[in-house]
Length: 118
Image (cartoon, rainbow, N blue to C red):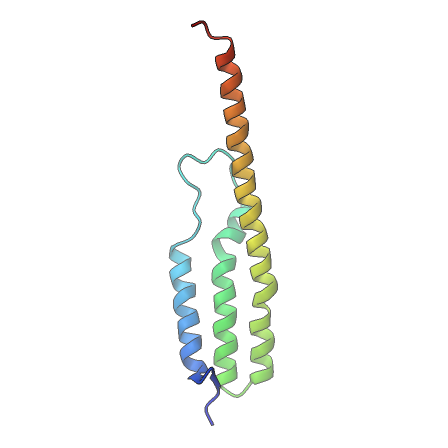
């Protein structure tokens, strides 16, 4: 009997997950050229690789489930939940860090203009 999810074979879901992982590996939240707040090595690593890692874990879980190791596959796929939560926390913190840096730059620019002659 073939294992399925929503009537679709798990091998298909695993291939789809791998495709998303590869796509996200190449399209990720890169720091823009006008970025004010630099990222730490840890921030860069998490933002660069954790989203793809989530999809690889899901794909591995699908392939294991299709191969008959359903319990192990479920556990590996569920490892994607904390990894994704860590990724989301870093995304939110990164955006807040950049927004704060931009606000500080605006405040600094505003203070410089206050003493300029008309």
